[in-house]
Image 1 (tube, helix red, strand yellow):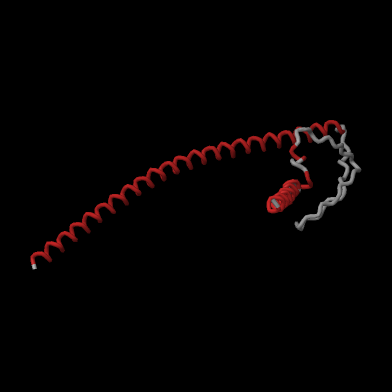
Image 2: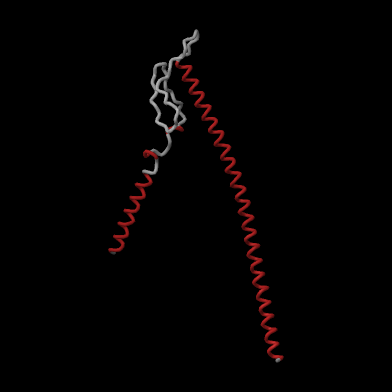
Length: 157
């Protein structure tokens, strides 16, 4: 009875720890990456907005300010810039989706090739086992014949 209680306590502790590790396995306790959401990004860019410097290991200087564009006779409103950016992001997502489909098709092809090779391996393995059995039987016959020859030689002497 005491063993069952100790075992139950130990198992519950192990399950609690494994549940804790499973919960923290996601980045920042999030089950998915918010970068890949379907909603378009709608941040407005103004000519005088500042961009936070990105800390990278590269040697290129970080951009700290977006310089205003040269004044021309035709000005582009912020909505046009946002729609262009949204279109660019949607195009990028479409390209990523296309690449993902191609990679999945390649994976299916690899899986089918693997199953074909696996089937060939099984057939060859069976043939190998049959040949090994035939070899053992033939060696047994030779040993029996050798033993019989030795008995006959002993009887002749």
